[in-house]
Image (tube, rainbow, N blue to C red):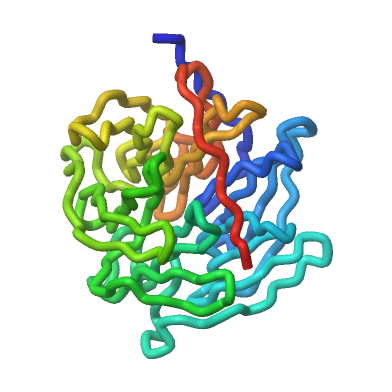
Length: 299
């Protein structure tokens, strides 16, 4: 095992930091602060953070083939132009559920944008159950709903052979697998691949490495765990200096660094004094494994 090193690279405390994505051409990490209502970009050379503020909770950001970004904002898929800080709605979902908002999302290997919804939280992880759904935004801007009855739609990624879709509905405390059809974007045959243990707490964001193993950030668990989808076993745990770890992605010039977002919303002064880096962005090096570059939305 190489020696694992953890460093807080952005100490500004996000309320709910989420959806980290490495943008190679900018040598930057893009991420959101959901309830802070902003999309942020940390430059790995200058160490500066730029941000764009928006008018609703912004839960995830993805790269776009034509340049700039797509985001989920409230219950809308939207396009973000960074330079002029403008956001344009593409399509609105869950119109019959005004209390719903999007949560995590990611672009699939064919350039479609998968993202899911949830009811707005009363406090962290406390909300009206089974209000959410999982959607795909296609490059032609049409939308498909895969299923509903979701509590907190969360981490997602695809196997290296593009035949399996991995998905987390947080309050099921499970990482699920589906058969996945790359041609159509359809998913089927849902099953549980890994059940979290008590001390791992709530499964949140997720990414995959070049060995086909999954990395899951554990909210309230203060860790990322590495899972083998073939065996359904946990093979590694990396603990962080904050409890509310929310999501993870690989980045850096050869995708050998892991970036982990975190949250501080809902913490009292006493817990904040024990974890002053809560809401920061962390870089983990020395994992000895690389990640897969993110896909870009084709629409």
